Image (cartoon, rainbow, N blue to C red; front, side, top):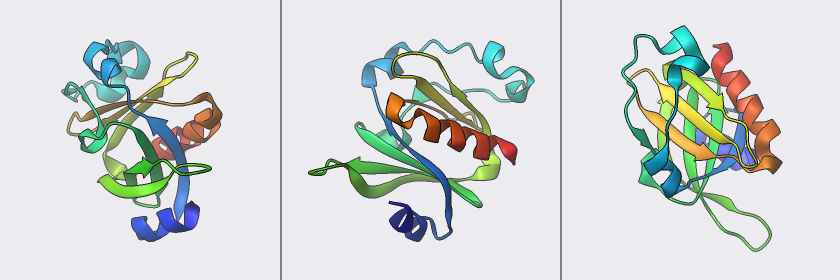
Length: 139
């Protein structure tokens, strides 16, 4: 998938992971931002949780040299494939990426303008999601 992602990003993909939306999660999210990310968000008015592009289903988050992008995915015979670009933001706008513990960990992406995306990470992709978080928070 890396070659196609890099073409769509317009730059090499550094890290990426497959995620899922859970509409019920968005309605019931109770995220204690202060305890998890501390001072990093002291000056950000975090908006209600949402989904990138209001898409429900499978997502792929890709991190390039200067961008972070969220793509929809379509089911395939053997594995899902990229569908379309939903949201693209500069990496510099990422304020926090938190991964909660659990059987299917919840992932929170928070941006400078307070945008707050909440997605689920299948266990099989947790290592890749941790790499995404590491790359996003190093800059």
